[in-house]
Length: 179
Ligand SMILES: Cc1cc2nc3c(=O)[nH]c(=O)nc-3n(C[C@H](O)[C@H](O)[C@H](O)COP(=O)(O)O)c2cc1C
Image 1 (cartoon, rainbow, N blue to C red):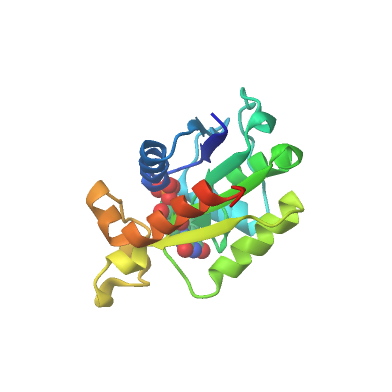
Image 2 (image 1 turned 90 degrees about the vertical axis):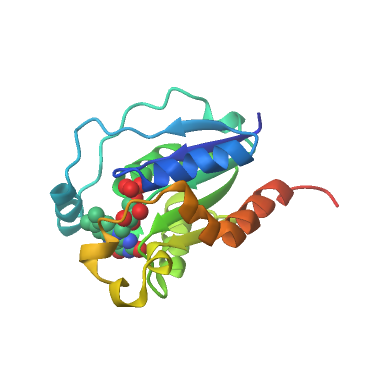
């Protein structure tokens, strides 16, 4: 296997996405786990006090994979801290890497994610794709924390994202191929 999906998920949305990708792409899969139990309030404190996250040791050799697919939520316009801790630790072991997230969605956020990844890894990602919860909600519920933060994705929701997911997978599969 030359591809691995590495994911972090707190409330399950990105877990479901990682599993969906794993069904469609020949790949190994690895879940990032934190050493301490995380509560929603600590997400806010991490952001406020610029705290990082302590994660379990990685028991796989990342360096042997040619393509790395990162799946993670976005917190406060930034990649979730457990994924950032993973990237800090493994940045020298990442060959071609791709990032995909199920997040609330915000205009201009994708560029911020791209820059954040580039700064940490010191190399640009091959692809950054956002799947917006806002796109699954009726107009009157979009951008309202009450609806977006508590939204739990299910597999039917992927129909709405099908085009974007296919484009992402195509990019992963074609990347690096000699034409
Ligand atoms: C405290 C907090 C802050 C968040 N900030 C953002 C944000 O800035 N931008 C965004 O698009 N989504 C934001 N979200 C939404 C999450 O990215 C979204 O709910 C995601 O699907 C959760 O993934 P998970 O279920 O895999 O943990 C935030 C969620 C929480 C709880």
